[in-house]
Length: 212
Ligand code: B16
Ligand code: MG
Image (cartoon, rainbow, N blue to C red):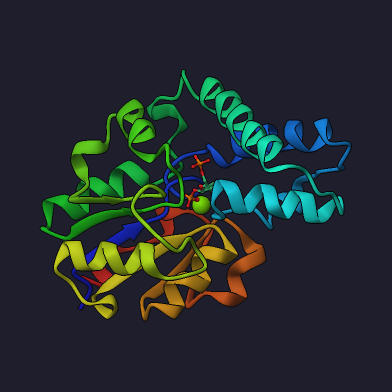
């Protein structure tokens, strides 16, 4: 019996994964490193600092810690600037209907995101009030693929991992969910279908009645 749903944010709830890609591509190009969509797959769900480390590995580059911190800041400034107009038209298919239906049925709802911008994004989307718990990149010691973000989410909901479904669009997130003992549903990213328990093209394909 499923009693809780835990949602990744970027790429599951909202289209912001593309904004991250554009911002990281700009950062990579400033370092003379080629960065395309296939490289971005490695960064999905990965924390800001770990993402920059992966870009530097891609280009076999080393930089000073001052330059590293400056690049993290300029990436985030550019990214945050690019999402100022975010609104409910940017929600991915099926999100609002599922959240509303689950809430009405008394299913607990959480966000489990690597992003430090999660609360800002939920407020822009005007869906922050629907979640019982938001665990984000500010509240974890170990980022995805470590399961901490989802384990903290389940604990805050008062549920066991096997009572919760985690919805994810990233390999790092599915790995985290499986390591934590959750039901791991991959959404909208066929590249990670094999890693997950179940694959959905989008959340319109999920039937709450079948699980709760
Ligand atoms: P920020 P998620 C992740 O969010 C994104 O997938 C990833 O692209 C981003 O680098 C990471 O958050 C950190 O985000 O720079 O805003 O703190 O998919 O776990 O919701
Ligand atoms: Mg994601």
